[in-house]
Length: 413
Length: 150
Image (cartoon, rainbow over all chains, first blue to last red; front, side, top):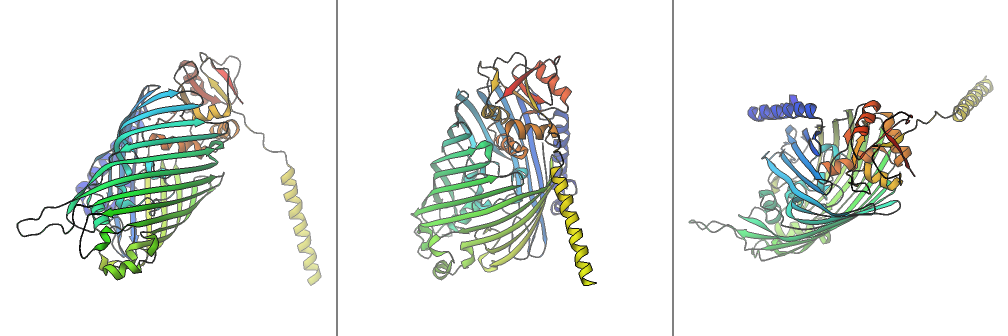
């Protein structure tokens, strides 16, 4: 469990901080339950994972060894000042090897005002940093007990570009429509994506020196639920724009080879879920058209190539005994729909074809020893490395076929 | 000898079938009831299943007269909660928990207030204006009002 995190042998100070924070949260949670006073609630979560890989690296693991640097901590507070006013915010910290360093950040912070509310219809507005509704799971992707397994399907919910999709400052209009046995909920947001992260730079322009800035973007989602959620379906549509500012050339003539490029992502996710007493089946399909221009790197024409990223997964969950759950999932992503095998890419760039696709078969188990604890174990067999971070996996070391075992303990209040 | 073995096996199978049949016609376990209760000051007389789902799903913030809705629930492992979800709301308990989690950890809503016993449920609902909850059976001197859900 969290208290005995051997991980933290990597950094004993960090270990002590984590354990203290966890114990403090635990005491706090026990003391206050979740309702501090009328309308004020406090909730939080903590998780610690162990990663074992045969090849390649994920979240701080090394091939053949165990990585203990996968950790999530978060605490949120909400205040329902009046039935039509809600203020909420969440602080969180996440570790994932070189992909995330545990820096404390504001996950969301916004004011929600219900403009119209009656039995049939709700209509409201949210202003501030709001979580992006993208697919079924993006809004709560860092909270272990809301996920079916330890990792979300990486095809659609890629960790290396998570900041891009996670949450963004902006304004959202949202609503619910209640019909006789159906519920339709929707949200439309105008936002400024937060994209200045080295992972996104590595993912998008392959280690060129410079940084990205978000342009005004749009995201919309509609969800339909039939008969209390026996069937759920969703459509998420977004247009995200980012602009690359190359690093200026220094005294020695070093800088970025790339020009001031622009990328526009036109993205859509179709989601479908069927829930039964013991079984849940989920499928999502995402297509993202990437429009690139202005990078003008003579030896990397790929940086200005428009491509369509295709991603999908099929998942089934079986609640086979009280407190127990089994997971099976097939998850696939192709960074260029026209070149699924990556061979055209490999021929043009000399980089491994495996960077361009990933097919992941996952099986997992979950046990809940208490209502606020979850223990997970899951095994992945993967072909390809499209969703592996380039900061952890150099092109020369990337292997096509690899296996990964993940273990995780998670707690929430 | 061989024939005798087959005969024994058929007998065993017949016995098994008879047992299974007997089990299947045994009277079903009586289904425990769950009744929705509200604060006596709540004006609304009845709820549709959909509206009850919206209230316990933390999507409906107000009663028809504008009073804020305050939702009380039992822990998920209690059979009363399970019965309430299945019989009154016609959903599975895990679905309700997932909806609360989506609201609580994205900041778009709040969780209901958990109570540890039926006595505490009755006590909290009786003193909290706009409160809604559920118990096994309302008795005549309970300081709460039953609410029919159809």
